[in-house]
Length: 169
Image (cartoon, rainbow, N blue to C red):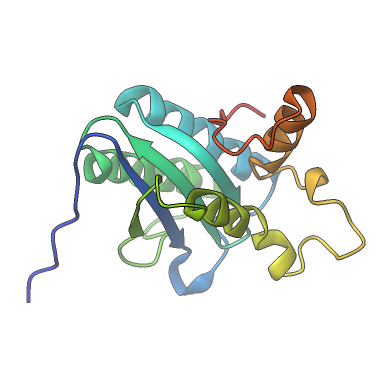
């Protein structure tokens, strides 16, 4: 049976995530996190994507991204293939890094509160899996766009919910 085609159109917004093969780590250390961010930044330059929220976990990632052009499939193929190749070269490995097909859920950004709710869901991932303890500050978790949201909200006096975050760390 053939896979369902992904829905792509100009201006689409997606919640994209993928997990390591066999739920293994896709980020072993800070250098891997930086490598993924650099590769993602290159993907954004190639595709014109706007990343509104992101979090990198040990064995998976979440992105809230907007595609001004209908190019999610092409861009995700480049991102995951390129990161896998770089990760494997760095760790002297070969083969798959990610489990199967990445998941992409089409988001209706204008639905009342949904964009903010999804952003919260993405940013709270480190708390849910106890990478950030209840007594710790989420703003100190480096591998998330939340610190940029937090700084933006403090500087502007706004809630910062529609701030496009950049990959630079």
